[in-house]
Image 1 (tube, helix red, strand yellow):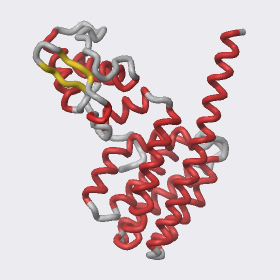
Image 2 (cartoon, one colour):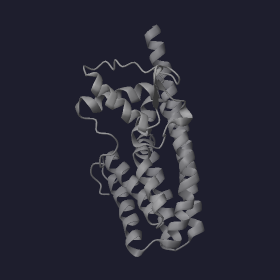
Image 3 (cartoon, one colour):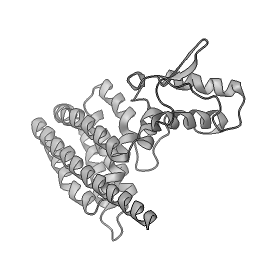
Image 4 (spheres, helix red, strand yellow):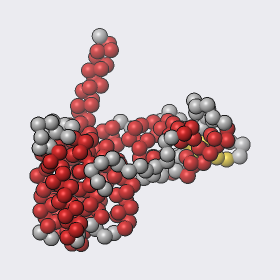
Length: 255
């Protein structure tokens, strides 16, 4: 993946049909329509019943709803939802409090990424190591100027982590990276904007790169664990900052 725009994934958002799918999906993940409740056919968008029924089929394929004779279409329990579906991931991050979603995502990273770094330390080819190093250099370059380019930094950061997963030579892990990489970008965008966070993360990424180049698989795993733990601390700082903002808004409204 290059340093430009992210490739599209998930259900198309264009057209009335796509708008209905995403509108209802967001409402379910936001909690506006609770599990067990009947899904209203009125989506707020002017569409025929045929179009709305087709949209419901898409949501059913994602595990969000089920249709039964006489009882209508109801929202399924959360444990039935396909939470790793690209659209459900996107709706989850839009609907849940950002810090809560980021904590869950970081827990997943803590389970997957140190093990992936260890595998990459054993299996990465010279070309794959070069791709990881190139991503690291692009991260550093994005912060080198007087005005940091955080968008370029985030995309390079994403390339760094995805290249490590690809270097594991495990197609299941690679598919997992394809599922969660958009959600990871949300995490990077939230934490890299914290004062000093992006620059502080560079030595942690460099430690991972150095261990991979030295074929120190255990060292790469430890370095990745330190990076993810650092991200967890940054998310807590992000959470406190967001809580402060909400408190200030409430205070200004009361004033």
